[in-house]
Length: 253
Image (cartoon, rainbow, N blue to C red; front, top):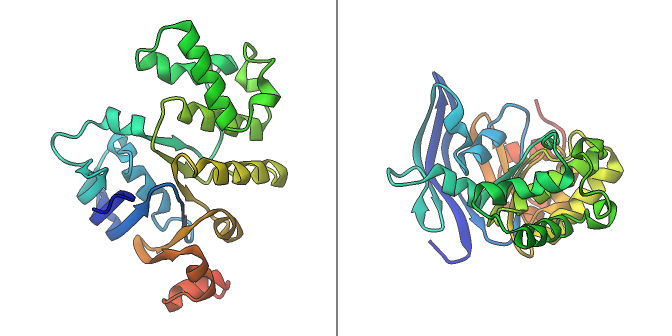
């Protein structure tokens, strides 16, 4: 696998009991880029990104075949360590889900679990993570206050900071703006463009304008299949597949 691909899927298939939810997915995710997955509800977008950090493992009746290669190793191989994988591939969910703890403790939680005990080191990690999530100026005087007191948009950036605190390489975002207003959404989009300088971001979005604005590469999914994958500009301006064009132009269904 080329140096600049961080995640690669080879004939990835997934079933929930009898439901064949992902069908022969082959894609390569480029390092330090934003990749968006678009497509109608229920087409497998969220299922696919949950394969990248083995979040589907917790679902009963879930069966995976094929490979997900991360940094040259198959994360579904017999020697793979799901906990270690989730440290390197962080996740931000659709609805902000801060812990009912202080802002500081939300960010320090992951590093503490990983064994960081020294107060000075924890302070450094918390400050850096919140700064990287473009939230520092808004919360620096409130670190001991409950994270539940933040606005929805601030909570989502806090959850991004929490994901950054364990120093991942890849950040998965499952419709991170769907519960947010346009102003908060704009802040998250600006943040995504900053994050790709240091991280690889994979985002699931229903919002095609958002995919066009923030991503370098876009994959269009339909009924469990990856119909088309390529540079975002090409996908939106001259898609190769008629199905992609119909979806993007709204002549779908």
